[in-house]
Image (cartoon, rainbow, N blue to C red):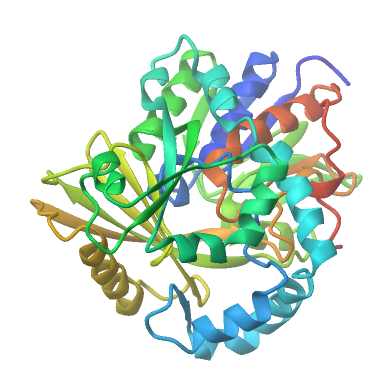
Length: 414
């Protein structure tokens, strides 16, 4: 393959930005396209966690019983827009089918190399740049109502231990000594040392875009309308701002990758998990470390510009706006967890996590088209973005990543 390719990267979230930066550093001519600007979607609204520990998928062997219990309980963190169920059903059946013991272990084996060195991957990408200030190291805490609640998570912790994630347990009065923000409902903490988080995801994405441009890349705000193939391989990306000729392209548009792939005649079982956050400005108290509040299934991150609480899963497509139910439940759970918290402003957000039925992203060339997939990361987009971008850059540059990428095969659903 020629050393200097002309590459179009579609999507300026964390995966697209990472791919664009690593491709540019490999000497390619790179143009990054996005209809809204850098980090306008899930890469802006995520919890900001570099979740190296997030190796256990949602669809574990108890998915049927747990899912049924959750979807029928208005106080659970899972919501379903019932009118969307007929369209969701093909994806949902595949999702449930992966929730076996063998399926779970296969997914875990795929997630470990994707997320296991996330902090190091982010640091390598930003070292010596103006984006470096947004990445920081930190411990991570799982907060439980009781030791019994922690013990009930034995399956997930057994899987984490196989990957080297062994928690330090804190109980009783020591809980509030460790995290004064917590109320009396929390009496057990499981702490993982030496992880990391992002201090402001939106500002981080903007900074990465500036790094890309400073290093010789080109960013254009444009809506992708079609892909032109010549003899079966990409030759141009068509947009509302004109045609962009290219030798290769990277598709990193999150949930919006699905309609673009249809233009290649390819259907991918990709659905949006609608996620929510509430961002508190000028909070009266902040946690000392990022946390996962296991009772309400929401993450908590002390950021530079306030306190972010993010989580919930709502299945319902991409056409409707935010639902009140998930936000109302999150507010109640936040009040229960942090009864003394006050703040100046609470900002609400909803976005789309692109999710595959096997909880693993698509990474690599789509057929022999010269279009490379870099999407479908579900809950670990920010965590796995830099690794994904580096893998794709290596593939386009003719280098072989030192990881078996078969778990992420971009053609596995064809």
